[in-house]
Image (cartoon, rainbow, N blue to C red):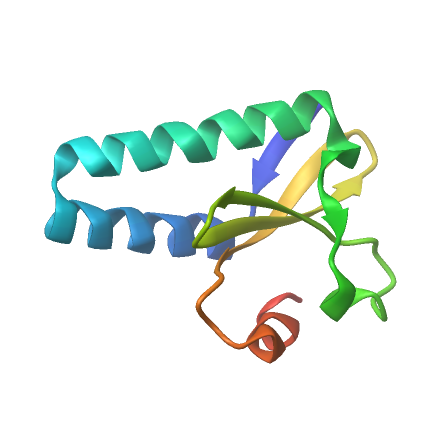
Length: 103
């Protein structure tokens, strides 16, 4: 299944990658990006791998999330024959902010 990133999710992920590069170096950034793309690829093979996102249960779409590392997760839904990554969420934030960010 094809994996598509919303512009918002991609921007959020790239902000975190930039922060990692500036504070921890290029090797750490490359490792982070590798982890992110490995998870996205795995979701393309197994869309049900993520757990249902409880904060978004009231939405018409079924949102799922998958933890990339202990600080970040991918929030996505299945739409027809592709996976749409709706947000790349830093888990250090209040869960309530996720409901406001995902459209």
